[in-house]
Length: 69
Image (tube, rainbow, N blue to C red; front, side, top):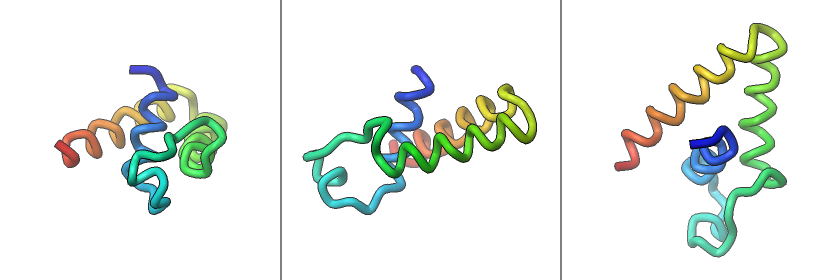
């Protein structure tokens, strides 16, 4: 699964926008949820390194994915 797909799935899990929750809208790179998650990952990559940012995304994705199933 790509980074964009993971961010979109996490964004869908954390959103409170009714249109997304009802399946009317999808999380895209322009969505506020996507932008927030991606900004945090970019900051982590800048402050520490890209590997840590990738690991964090994997950990959060796996955690949310396990809880949502």
